[in-house]
Length: 177
Image 1 (spheres, helix red, strand yellow):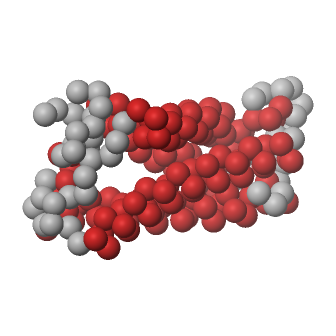
Image 2 (tube, helix red, strand yellow; image 1 turned 45 degrees about the vertical axis):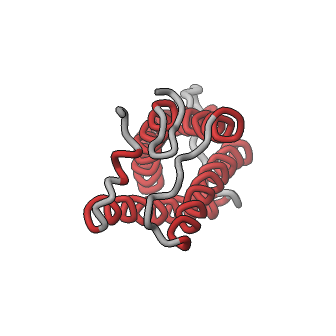
Image 3 (cartoon, rainbow, N blue to C red; image 1 turned 180 degrees about the vertical axis):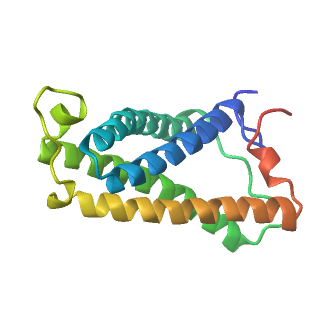
């Protein structure tokens, strides 16, 4: 089943969700490591991984938005959930889209303003700039911490539903019937 049903997500939504989750975790790990790397070669190597993965996450996010907007409908809220929880869940999902798009925009802004692309992608003699000197660096770093908080909240809510409420929420976001 490619499309979602009223009680569960379809295979396309599930695939986009879990692939995005893994890649966002990889981006956060590589981004924090790059920000703290003292060696320019290490930082450039991490950014050579970080930047293409960010482009893939951008494409997956765009695909997800188009998928929901044009081709599929989300399942109904979990049965017996208070209305405020359904609204909060909707807010969290929209916040993810906004944060992801803002992170990509600030990352692109940093690369453009700093002129770091030649150094990141291996041009001979090119050196990495001090990214903190460029205005998008602040929102990019702060956004990463906000994204971590949002991920922790999202995962915590899913685990709460799965194990405390016992409503099998995680099954809705996995493959199968």
